Every structure is written in structure tokens, then in C-alpha cells.
Length: 354
Image (cartoon, rainbow, N blue to C red; front, side, top):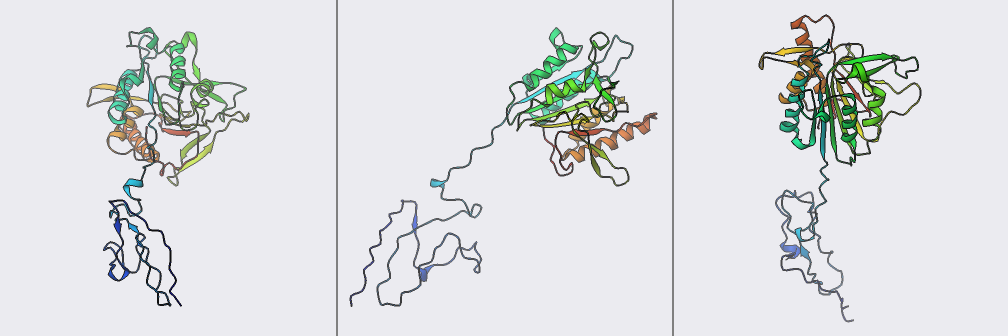
């Protein structure tokens, strides 16, 4: 009986490919353990029981690099597209109320220090940062109520997934009692623009409508508020309060009692200088012989000293530093920084980034 003839199509490899040696001559690559077969070598089928010639298969082989065992040959590999780098935008507001009955000595210094931090540590360009202080010569850059509202609208205008936005405020904060308020404590928190005595304050409901609700998915917004009564000034649904007995942060539900939606499709996180019933203080910086808001100076210190790996790390650093300053100055009340957010997350697991 004649031996069967196998009509096996041959494969002509590219000049860069190699031919697998005969099984009897094959030695596994040294970086594979002998008990774990190489994923790149396909052995020949077992010998046939009939006395027929073994078919010769001309199979191209791939010699992988030790650091990329699972990557296909370079000629066939197309790397995945890199994630799009979004824009960075910031609105920084510092108000000293210089000619009022209640001036603040460190707010404009705070604004300048925060701008420099964004440029030096977080790659914000100067052109992407809008400053609102009394020192600005452009009338549209003075921190009036009208200008603050317009710049907050600019901050979130045309934002797209991947964008990182920041709103920083150093100035007076207050509480306003409303009988129809949907706040847990029955009061709305508010920021005080330069002309608040004549034009009114900016309440948390308006801030939420302008910069929280419009954000699309994939956009990140941070707010850093160094002001009195500021814990829930963005009206975000979750507040992370530290349990003093356990040392852990517990999440409080601050969804409006009315059922109104005040969340966001984007991600919003706010660091506040103190709780809603507390005050934020300023202090003299010995290194600069100038005044600064304690929350702002401690926040910058946490970033520069490497204590900003997670949101929990920043909160712990802020609480410790602010308490230390308070004890040394003999403050009559406590100042405890707070964190609110539009989403639930583990403060010690989530990396901090702007």
C-alpha cells in the first residue's frame, strides 16, 4: 500500500522570521522554566504509527524580548492610543476687603501662592489661570459678584472629558438662614464677593448650579475654599467627617431633603478650611514675614512635603498642621478642614491629582 501523501501548503516567512528547529534539536529558551512550556513554541505532532515520512512544516518563530513576553512581533504590533490629555483651567479668587470694616490680611498672598503652586507642581499654564483680586488693574478681574459668577461660568464652559478644573477662593464666608432651605442644618453657606454689602453674597445653591451640575462625565473639578463656614459651600452630596474615636473618615449623606439633584456627571471634590459652624483663621508666616490663610499655607505645605499621595493623606496633614498652629496661637475655637465630594470613594485609596 503506498504511503499517503499530504498536500500541506508551505509558508514563506518574512526575512526577519526564523524557522523553528526540529524537535530533537529544540532547547527551551533560558527564561522559561522547564516545567512551564514556552508560549511561543508549538511542538510537532507525535510520531505517526505508520511508516510514512514526517511532514516538514516551515513555521515562522518569534523571539520575544524578556521584558515583553506577551507582545506580538513588532511588525504586527500597533500600540493602543494614549489617553487624550485634557485642558487645565483655574479661577483663583483672593479678597482682602481692604477698605471695609472686616479686612483680611492674607487673602491676596494666598491667591498668589496658589497660582505659583499650580504652575510649579501641576503644570497649569499661566494663560489658563484667571486671577481675581483687588490688585488687578483690569476691571473685569476685580472680585465683584458679577465678575466671580462670569468667571465660574467660563471655568466650566466647553469642558470635555479629560479636562481638569480648579476653583480657589480665599475670603469671607458666611451662613444664611432660610426657612425653605434643604440643607441638613437649615442654613445655606455663602461666599462674600468684594461688593457683597451692596450686591449680595454668592450662595451654595448658585455655585452648585454653575460649576457642579453642568460637568459632563470625564471632567474633574477641584475646589479649595479657605473661608469661614465653608464645609458644604458647593452643596455636594457626600461629606467625609473624621470619627475622632476610631480615626477613620465616615461619609455623611448630604443629599437635599427636597430630593433635588445637586450631583454631577463629572467628578467634583472640595477641600474646605473648616466645618460649617466654624471659622477659618489666618496667621503670619515667619519665613516670608507676611500673612496667609492657615488652611492655604498648610495645604501648600502638604503638597510640597510629599504628604499628598491620597486625599486622606492631605486631610490628615491639614488637620495636624492647622491644630498645631491653633495651639501655638491660642485660638479660642477649633478649625477642622473638611472634604466633600460628588461621588463615594475611599479617601486613603484614591490618589490625589489635579
